[in-house]
Length: 173
Image (cartoon, rainbow, N blue to C red; front, side, top):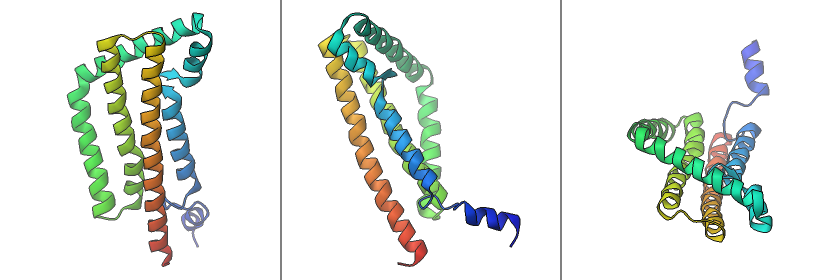
């Protein structure tokens, strides 16, 4: 057996049976639910408990990040939507139409993150329209985080089911 054969045998290149894919999936959703509009959730909780400088930090960070999200959406939103739609369609067709497992795996990572991005722009627009402070701001951020976590639960569940199905097909079970 040649070097490449041994390397590919040692490192399973099939996506859904690779431990690194599942670690990446867990880290992706952990990070997505930890950073709420670019603000660490621990800081939001501290601001809610203590107020003071932590509350001012949260208000400042949310304002800066909301304006940043809205600026990107207004300046490049059409291009991002077009390119994102192309990439998602390409991954879906190659993955599910032509049965390329790597494209399936990447699609199952990227498609839900697209929804998280849209949810973040929606929350940024809500913040810009209402300008909440204090408990209203914390409630809005908790709602955003809850939505991201719900998307994560559904995404991990669907990915796990699809991954098990693909592993059963490959192994012949």
